[in-house]
Length: 229
Ligand SMILES: C[S@@+](CC[C@H](N)C(=O)[O-])C[C@H]1O[C@@H](n2cnc3c(N)ncnc32)[C@H](O)[C@@H]1O
Image 1 (tube, rainbow, N blue to C red):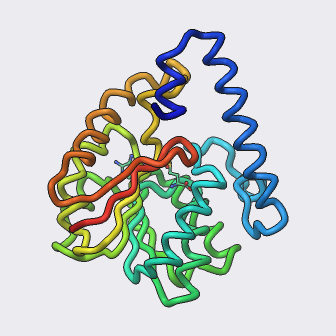
Image 2: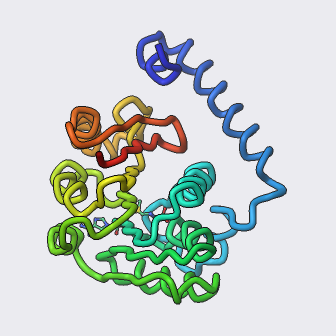
């Protein structure tokens, strides 16, 4: 049984102990990479003037995205959900090394403006295009087999509905990553309870999709990673 499954199956005392252990793991990992990190979530947020943004990925999730990009060198990258542009900037720092480009979708105007400023500040604006609008309209408008890599990080309630199109617009051999996949077993603030059901549905759809090979990794809030067959 995995550690995360353990967390929900055991009593609350055990749960607290396990959460302490997870925090210890996380602190150890962050400490390990502290020296090498050129871009950190904390720094990025501090340099962003606007504070009301929707949360961005954790540092370990950003590192994981960079690692996959380094391994696969995807040319055309799609991100769904930009916020202030932390994950896009992080991916762009790797993608520019091999000539990759990023298209990122955001429907909140303030977030998109902040993201653009952050891209300029980090010197990656030349390889990132922000598509301003609703992902529910933009994603279905792309042609089949357009992207080599897709990172899904928008409203969790959209994940199940957009999955079919995400697979359609991903090239065979392309990689699909979605954040927050462990929401169904995490101790979430009750205000996020409405995200659990769609996330559970989405995880099951990915796990059972005949044209995907996937696994769910306990990185950040959980990342489901799939390759299109
Ligand atoms: C979790 S944040 C993205 C964080 C970002 N990927 C990062 O780690 O730096 C999700 C973003 O998706 C945007 N979003 C949610 N639903 C959307 C939709 N239907 N179309 C476009 N953007 C959407 C939100 O406004 C929010 O900024």
